[in-house]
Length: 235
Image 1 (cartoon, helix red, strand yellow):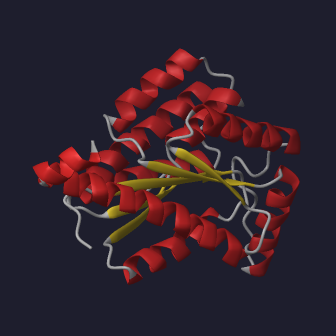
Image 2 (cartoon, rainbow, N blue to C red; image 1 turned 30 degrees about the vertical axis):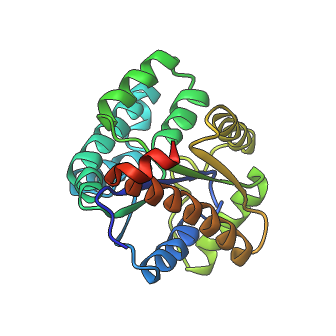
């Protein structure tokens, strides 16, 4: 299927929720169905944003405070949107992004204690009108997520210390989980919560059904927009 306008899907959730695995599986399924897919991540994705990613996750920005950290995330996001996401959407591709605006709202806003107005202003500048059409929130108790993250590091033989966020207290991680669920309850048209405590196959199946339903809806809208008679019948 070729779309004249792309579709933007962000994935959110706590550490170890399985976002990377599910993004990979969804990308494979969508490509098999004829979609052109771009997989990306935050912080990072574009060349400039990847440079900032290292500064953030290494903890080098931490001494400057959460406000500076939020500004770095915003700078990375703006480069990411400008250089990668917006052009891909203009080409009609499905963009799958590991974290986006909701992570900043939760990590810097809720648990970083930054005022909502500041977060909102940074968000508007960073995204420049590019918002996800759909957000999949993988929900998992913080203790299980952190255990998965530690096991993943052990399985790949990583000697790296936990990153800037993985090393924080479990109470902070659980607060973030509740914050993601709160966002989902306030924006149900965009956000879908998926139980990430189940098997990888069950999670992937649910996500694919959600995405296929939304893409089918977009196709109906596109068809109606291009066919006045169909548009009248749908109204």
